[in-house]
Length: 615
Image (cartoon, rainbow, N blue to C red):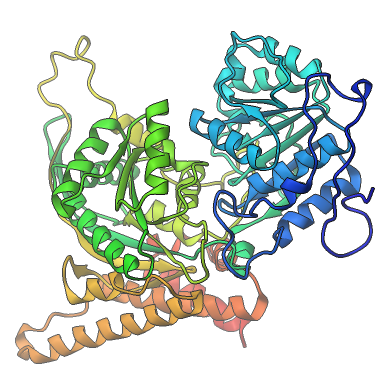
């Protein structure tokens, strides 16, 4: 039988094998061949976009070659969301069973919904997984090759899962393995349960965490600064996937606005969303923007719905997702969307069976909107999602990347994803560094993520304790908010200037076609920005001299940012480096915060350095 990963070049090969004798495998495991696995779509549960794959995508074949070159006990594969990790894992599992290396499979997933999603995918390749397995059940029977469980389920009774692992030669697939570091008890339980496994395949779409909890079965090694970081055995990042046409390009639509709120001390505060304020002011302004009682959320939802209508001209079943912080906000957002569209959106509030059924129904249908609380942010496949509203206070790089991952799965060449976000410097930085790959760091350094932490917003969102604080005269209260279009972020660049909601300038950017290649998106955004600038100049010239306003500071900042981003784009083409890496190096050399928060002087220093490098 040909082996995967031999020294010959060319596509991965595999063959059906004869049923092994009972002495070679567990007596209850049904026979599995590799024929069905060869015909699973590389983008399961959808077909691969035309032109992106035949039977396996290049990265999937490379990863299989890499695995079978040494057949390690542990293998960590990091691939951007939407790239086809499930197909890769199940092809590998089918090969290992067919080669009689393993007899049983245990899939560990973050949520109940993903357990069923894995079982459905496995069924397509002839592998039968039981997603309904409970810790109280006795494992057995000839119907299944294995089970699909959650990390929480393993943590509750690690000893049981260790017994199951030891009772046969077991392949453990740890989906979104970074969840193994969610709590010390979880990590310990996973090590206990799956320490005896014959093989372990760890998968992640976001190979980093914002904490320093070690992830089980992941190798760490010091980088050039001595910080211990995770080591992947195969890595397929967003930048490469985008150039391969495997994922969609993402357009971020940023919205700012004036926020007003009352603090717990009774003071009334006012700030503009997106300005370089302290963490505390920024978090409270952000929280005010997300309040459904203000005008920011309705304005942004209206704009997002217009964008969805534009996309649906070329992608008729395109859907939109609003990610909310909590259940109360989700219900309120759903009501606002219903008043805007006249259609009741799908509402997903928890990780229960009914919620999974709603997600599956939405995915298979053509309804416009789904509103969810966090659970749709990771691993759940709704490939028709094309427009998103990031209306949550979750702020870690890990969560943001997972949320963006819900929109990047490609079904056909030319599709784009549009995500509406608050114009907060922290989110601007994350959006601008989408192509920047990170590893999980066990050691904190002074330069690591001086970004807004989830704990800051969690503290602001925490309700007062009635029993302890009845004497408090005031509680935090959002008073007023409005919204304005701020800018568009795409491919590391910024386009457009501040404009009123509903204006021609805003509609210029909202109305770009939904089917465009990345180069076409970039060129069209430049054209729309130039048209916006001409309109502004014409309006100023039409005014009497005494009524003309002097250029505001933000105009100068916008011009500097636009010039810097243009130079970074040119430099990227010269060197092949990702935009995010060039920006990161400029920050390291020249100092200062991210582009969204940098001063005119700081931006000019980076521009000058780039110009010297490009001479």
